[in-house]
Length: 541
Image (cartoon, rainbow, N blue to C red):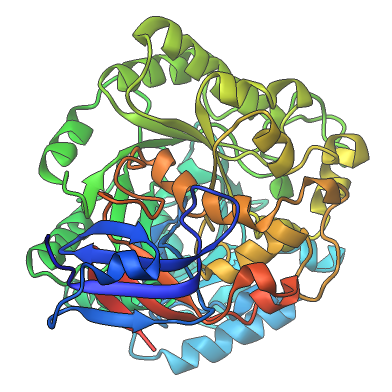
């Protein structure tokens, strides 16, 4: 009998295969789980060289998988090189004061970058940000401020210059804000307009990149995240993908402590040549091009999400999709045919229906798919479409903490009738849909505990309800499955990850308490004691 390198024991093991826990152990050899069973059964795999960890009543479960993260932007933002206090700003003045303070503290940096300002949190009179506001604070360096939802940039004059944006700049979707003289006013709306600003603002210097990535991976391991994603935030493939190569080098040096599933942009032409080259190069169990990403609409906060009916607060508009349906459909059909799973950003009910229609046509043309398609966010679906996810085997990749971030915003934007179907976790599950939870970091924190709490309670951290459909909360076991198995299913790795089973890769987390035996508010206090990724201990308290 082969002997284990590592054995973990506890009275509370959640494998993900049932709704409860059991007392027993997990034996690991190399990077694989070789036994899940009782204490006596796993002890048979022990010898003098086996490391044994006994955790009494602490919960052992599969490693968390964040199914929707902007990893490279997030790593840069987590590095201290970005002013993130703007999430707390309640007025334009407060926001500008925060930027001015950060600007002074980062005098050695060649740009000033921030994220988190949120117009709906400001008084009506304040909702006119412009480049002159930022020029008064920092006239000599570019200033890039990304909004909280990630779809609007506020720039100073130097940043506009760095992006080569002038009076003649136009975009086919979104908008470059202009003043009365026809000159750029510093505001960029939606992804095409924001594309260059995103690339410049969140790009690390070459000599900083390894340090930033390693530090971020350490933080992810401390939170129990063993797999995550980098989903493109651009409608077209941009950049030199040097970040991919940095991760590849970390993997070759045995320093990559988190699995990365990469989703570059699907683009707008039925052509996967660039993606093919990237997939051929990055295809290991730790670093892989897992599929492609595209946007259909924007967000409800700026009325750019695509709805079937007009907005409640803007009755003359229901938004519009970024592209004609035929363009999206042709790209999806081609990419699926080349065995690329597609993640489609769709928030409004019109966009969600478009995504489902495209995936349904792909199934008709391509036949049963060996890869997985998913719709990302699904914040306001039409009730008639909720049952289509399971029928089409489309994963619902959702971010429960966005409920708290929105704070009943949907009531204002789409009214009470449509808000009854916002973030419908339970309804999707009851139809047989696979849920995959994530965070959309850096939009909200990457720590899983706040997300778990929001999904279980549909309350914010202060205990206040954050929606009008509390019946859509789901049990803890389903939440943990969505954060483990669902994430693996979404990226087509459920055969090797996502549950604690013999033969699967050893990605395992130990928490400092049994979540099944505590009040929901205690979830927020929970810490990770141990993280094992690929059979190696990458975090231990």
